[in-house]
Image (cartoon, rainbow, N blue to C red; front, side, top):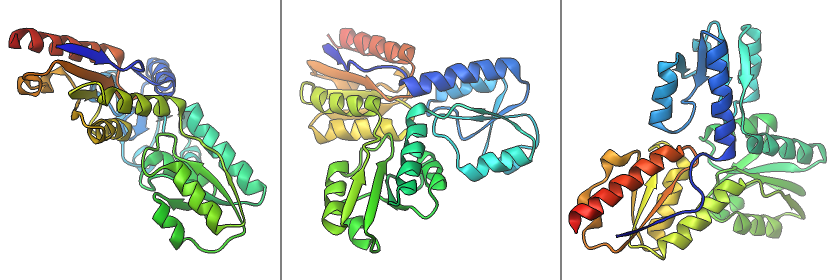
Length: 280
């Protein structure tokens, strides 16, 4: 069996920056807490838990020590509450996410009503919305029909967005509002992985996508591969691979989400090769 790997593997640069800061933080501070897992990868979460990093659901649960802000960022009010409680804050928000905050604030300052394209329940989007109170959040072109009247609309998009086409949403906004100014804030890494998922899926019979089950970007990669005709399997590690997936398969694909370490992808590839040899 031939195994074709996507060109883009391992951590995206934003996650890599976050993890580097996390290593430095747990080495320098005794009581470090994140709100939500540091990354959507169980192996990395377990590694940091062993080093003393704990996870809390709310800043209300953190009475002292250091609050570590993961790549998704946090709403403005959480930063304010952490400051009021006297917590040390280490901000490791991904630069691509910070860019969205800056672009949205600039558009608002220029007089535009802000529209955020993204999942309103995603922590990144919650953070963005907190920077531009009163913004509208939509996910589909159909959502445009439900928006109130306005003259000038400014648009940003979730960095890992892969739902309904951003271009289609902007086009529909343009047909409804007098002036629309859109900034494509989809992360380059996300765009590359999604493009590779579609291309690779057309070249293989089975696609294995490695990443945390709670990772939205990894789920989307598996869905994209399936939509292009490959039998797609989303796994967190090599132990989940099933021999039956590769029965009679000549070409298989392998790719990973943005929170997946390269060494884990290598382990999956080795297990796939072992299963292929066993089948032959």
